[in-house]
Length: 77
Image (cartoon, rainbow, N blue to C red; front, side, top):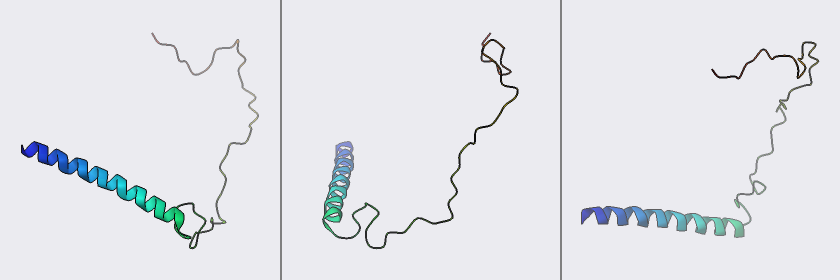
């Protein structure tokens, strides 16, 4: 009996949370601020000190051809 009550409390809490999230989403979308899109009042502009990380092409004089064995082996014994 008490297991059923615990399960009902958990299910009701989950349903209440989902309903509250949906209501907040609808009210936020209808309002002029805080709609979650990141472009309302109080939205922060991106910082100007960000650095783009990437890999530059490198000339590798020791590149192997498909016929030469690789230094890294993936064979299993």
